[in-house]
Image (cartoon, rainbow, N blue to C red; front, top):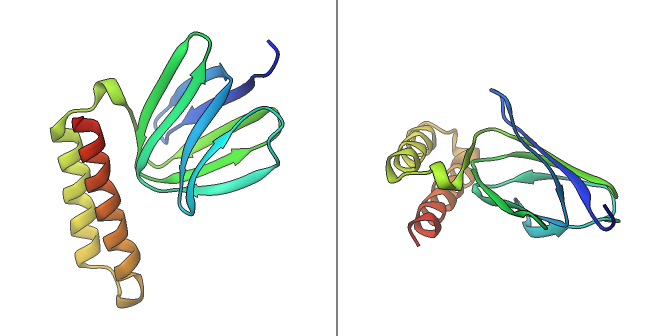
Length: 132
């Protein structure tokens, strides 16, 4: 299929998705980005947010808590710390993620406090986006 790239999403537990996509929207740590066929080779870290793969068959969307994305001209591979299909998300799942992040932020060393608090805020924003 022309103008597509291979998208694979893997979590520590299992492979969650393998799709021929026209574009993949990625919540990068340094900002959101969209990968399409022919994209320059890039590796980026993920922040908590919504990862979307768009294809002629529809869109698959996952809430991710972090990880890495490797982008090439022909594919995107995402290694997610934790990923849940958006349609499977509930307030309880996100609340558990927020609670876990807050607990970790509370014990983070001083030089990591700001980054830990940013993760909590990103998860709160994720919860807000899923609620709508």
